[in-house]
Image (cartoon, rainbow, N blue to C red):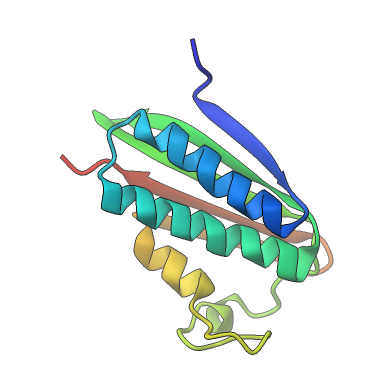
Length: 135
């Protein structure tokens, strides 16, 4: 039987592509629609890009989950980077510390069905998101 989870170390841009592809292949097993798959891939790209841009290394962990007769995907992204000093500010649309559009974390929150973030200065950041198959 094929595993129902993958863990992808993120160090470079090519790892971002790999994380997207592996998560998408895993999610296909639960019959997500093509638009849901695109959203999952976009969310993983944003989170993995943050690792490369701010933390230099981390991990994207993706698992298929079932809860209360629902099927979905769980994504846990962890890094050992500098941490986020002001999470509410980082969650505001348009806020960016890197002169980007600032769509990253708020965009991920909109794409997924649940979103949690924990960060400690000097220790790193963990983002936990879930997406459920619409039926």
